[in-house]
Length: 115
Length: 114
Image 1 (cartoon, each protein chain N blue to C red):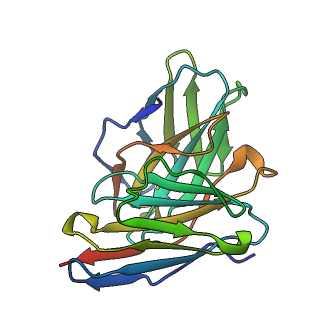
Image 2 (cartoon, rainbow over the protein chains, first blue to last red):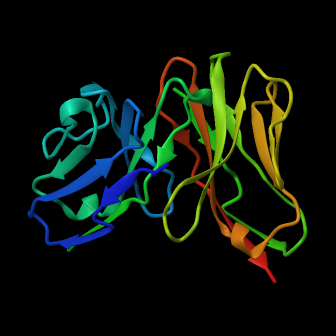
């Protein structure tokens, strides 16, 4: 079974530029999560999708961040314009209610560097 | 709101020895789940072990086991027969029965010495 796929693995941009990250969850997982992980810290949730509906986006900075999950499968997270403080690892995870403890499985992440 | 605390920023262990990583959490709910994830330099968060709060028996996965003390809100991870490949950042995480997001601790960097 393929795991969670994310691209790109690395992205370096200058501040004020736009950037987008892509995630393809594990097949059959209806719940998708985007987390941000700052250096030396644990991940923090940005947004959670149940199928194509964003059901928890309270931590998403909506002035510059947006996300979509068309057709309830893969998802894109966008930042426009990027700021220096957005430098972090962006992790995507997916889960299925039918699995034990609704365990979340993570992708390899995208490391964003904003110069 | 739930909080997860890992009080050991760094730990080291000799290869083949045993090490215990600490984690405490705070929750007002009785239905929840606890997890340990491993994050090597590749950044992939890998599930190590999970525990359902309603289960009194401590979870075990090969060389990894937990000491779940529900009353004390403690959830430590024991790694037996440590191997070089165990070196990584370890995160403790909590999920309530009602919410689906994970709340992570700040992590413990484990070094395995040959």
